[in-house]
Image 1 (spheres, rainbow, N blue to C red):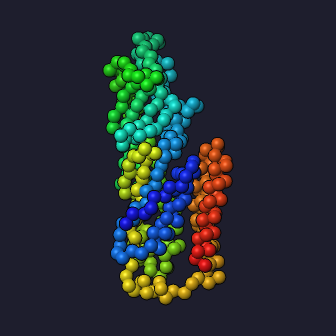
Image 2: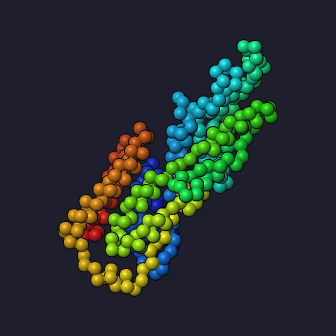
Image 3: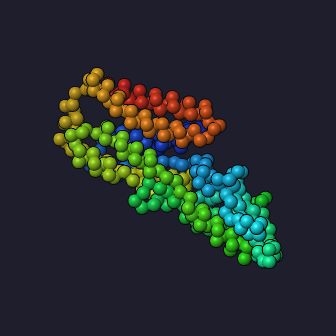
Amino acid sequence: MNAPRVRPCGRRDTATRLAALPLAALLLLAAPVAHAAGVTLPLELDFSFLRDTLVRQLYTAPGPSAPVLDDGHDCARLALFDPRFDDAAGRLRLRTLARARLGTWLAQRCALPVDWDGEIEVLLEPLVEPGSGSLRFRVIDSRVRRPDGGSAAISGVLWSWIKGSVHPLLGSFHVDLARPLADLRTFLPLVIPESDSSRTQRLVDSVALAGARVTVAGVVADLRFEAPERTPETERARAAEAPLGDEEIARFSERLQHWDAFLTFVLLHAARDTTATGVRRELLAVLLDAREELVDALA
């Protein structure tokens, strides 16, 4: 069974998708399921989100730039600048400007230095790290280009030296989704009857990343869990269950404080973009409205 894609519009996309995971899971649990079935929620990480994450991890110098190598003598140095992501026939493509110098430090001087400025194009493949909530990116191929995008000429020695440093660096790039997955595991028991602890635990234990793929908009990470089986007995029990009373609604609202902590995490993540103040206010309003509508629907 596949869930409808969570696709809010505008610049709030990635943060809202993270926040929407508990609501989407709740709707799926409320849908009729004749047998236990795998449910997949596609979580889209757009190119701007990937770039922001890359900058925070690797491009930490002003610019932003990534100081890959520097021998301290201005004889062997390499730095990357201005990273951009896009799609290249189903592969994640990173384009980054680069500036390099390679020489030999000899007798207190840099002998035969070679300077190069251009662009490096790297193809990456997103991979789910087994047993974790992280996406890793494997370097598939790379090449150099001129700053204007044309083909560049570079010596084999210099290019081998650049690749030997750039590939391991970019291979360390990852997107950590463990926190939203943990928050989803915390939230799910709030909407499952406490009397069915084994059903609850099976559902919580099944939450995991199942795979990732590249689209024209970014990377889609597939979040998968096993929807619980619904038997005639459980359906009769659900049909006989009385509507929630005022006290039960109040208790449920109190337990939604856990979700409020999750929203705080999402909004703090969005707050890293200092240009998105208006979007953050709109995002908060949307999420709080959804919270109130959920309580009203239960009533």
